[in-house]
Length: 457
Ligand SMILES: Cc1cc2nc3c(=O)[nH]c(=O)nc-3n(C[C@H](O)[C@H](O)[C@H](O)COP(=O)(O)O)c2cc1C
Ligand SMILES: [Mn+2]
Image (cartoon, rainbow, N blue to C red; front, side):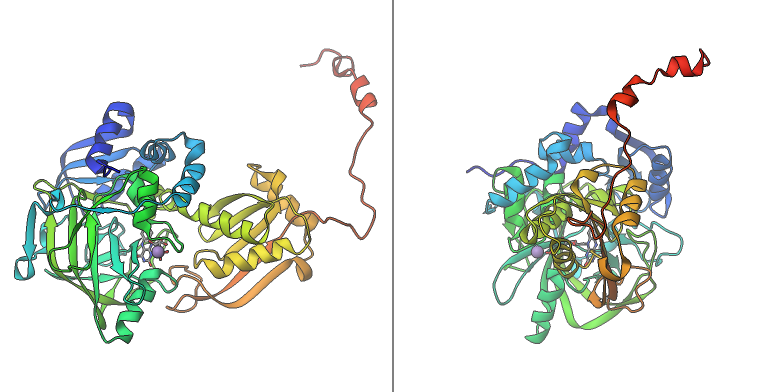
């Protein structure tokens, strides 16, 4: 099968041609310190979420694109499907993964800087929020690492804080594959080889956010319906990066050296202080001749939309594995999922709750409701909670689970947290006879409103 020719540039061209109103090009010089974030925040305040292309960013020769996946419409365009088919397409991709193919020539290696030549100060120095660390961040950094035991290759997004000419911090949350891989290297007394690529069309990003047993490169292939072309790294030979990315950092993550990192305003809307992260030392920086730097403004719409296809797919699959009548999943707030269930036995909601809370560090509060409540106003959800729940019986509380330290309520830096599930489904059998308020149909039909109101408006 021929490798996919999709890349960030082909996606930008498609948006330009097919969704012109979705693309805003900013010609004048902007500051990377808060200004790009401010422009996006103001647009979102006005219910607009265009792709932003900043041609002239102070302190760098690279143009910056942000908000690539800031609308479901653009995500759908990137996957070549209708809005409502994103979930189905994701399921197909996971069911039909396609392995990447190695190529020898790669645009992303047109320019390369190795070892002493590496200078991260050529990158845009982006800051988002006034209480964040002064150091700039990379937010659209997709990290590639190989498990030293299984040799499986893993992809995931991690925030990188530029700490010096050739080092960064990297946040790896407990419960993530990269965290586990890093720990395996540490046990072997070795630093972890890591490659980071920047510049991805939606299918790559959405596929990289897959969470489960498959290698993410194969899910990307499934989404593209063609193999992704990858190239061997120059200084970390066991790793491969997409040949048509814009920019790559190669290097190693220390098993012992920790550096100060943060605070950084996150998807929750809050930063949670300065802590320690392992140090990533960059051994090579490669890029296209004219790289486009991709960014995600932390905490804005794109940050929430981008991972949603992967999280919804996985949550639905996990819930169905214990309750086949699970019909839908809605991520209604950070750390909170609403699950629609056609219940067959009273044990199902609890099984769903326990499965989900243990599978995902971001699953903190799970609310299971009747599947018939799809798309209703939040008030209806509260009504169903009020009328179906006996707190002593239908609220499940778990004291010490793995969550995320990014949760402002989490009392420690390790992400150990309490979790909760609520079974708000209607009972299959009621302990007392219940009758729903009803007036006979024929009497209702016989009422003539006009006559009663006597012509009043
Ligand atoms: C924009 C963005 C930034 C993210 N930053 C981090 C991060 O700094 N640290 C982290 O552990 N996970 C981060 N994540 C979440 C992981 O990338 C995501 O959960 C991924 O699917 C984990 O992959 P895994 O199942 O292979 O561990 C981020 C996700 C997004 C969308
Ligand atoms: Mn993984």
